[in-house]
Length: 284
Ligand code: NAP
Image 1 (cartoon, rainbow, N blue to C red):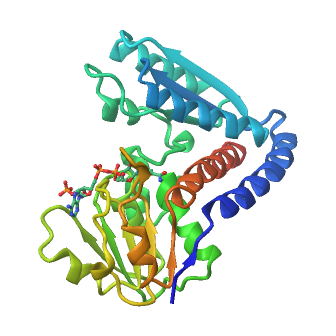
Image 2: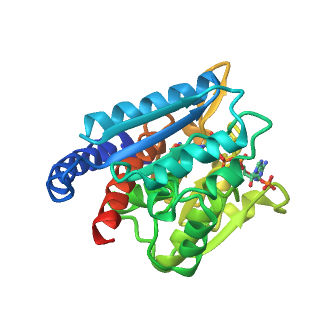
């Protein structure tokens, strides 16, 4: 039997609608709309498109757009000064430093300067520590989007075997912490994992976040499992995930497509995180 296809666009549209409604209410309490400061350094075309899409989504939700574009020649100190300015600005609820930054700049050190209350990507060491310790804080957007998809399709997380392929700070590690906090039994695989198909085939929830097209085939999937494909790989055939969609869809119970699965959720959760950051400002 073919899997049910998870409609990330529809779930993202619902989240964005909810955020737009709450933005209005929160704006009245704050005296100004919640605002997102985007920081783009240099002229990398892919980064420019990502930032433009995020700004457009913010504007559509009624979130104020505070964009900053620095030249590729900007120094570490100049970017740091801008981050400090955004940290101090009351109209800025959340700050997004688009990564990667140009060579010569240290993206991790710059990210660490963001006020954790405004850390909309949840990537500062303080946010990462709060996630691991289970204390309140802002969480990375893509892992939050995966959890939202699972909840929207009522996939049981507690007690389930969850296997994540990929251990990046952006996706794999924070998703492991979120799933663990929801009482899944979590296994994290990486490039040195022995017998990847056997480990993946244990999963009730299998998340592919490796950046390798078609890494996950039918042999990696337990019949009826939920398969979430985070991968976004630009190939000659177009945008592809990490999952070999056709054969896996014959075996899985639920599956995300690429595009139209996790991708739209990342931006939706960015908007929700901006709202969460604005609420933090309100509670002081
Ligand atoms: P990353 O930093 O490159 O990490 C990739 C991870 O996959 C690493 O942990 C790596 O293992 C592991 N890996 C690579 N090849 C493997 C293999 N053959 N078998 C098992 N594990 C393997 O990537 P990322 O930033 O997490 O992104 C992963 C993918 O998700 C990319 O395609 C990216 O474009 C996509 N992405 C999508 C969204 C979205 O919104 N949909 C958001 C973020 C990322 P090692 O640690 O051992 O090297």
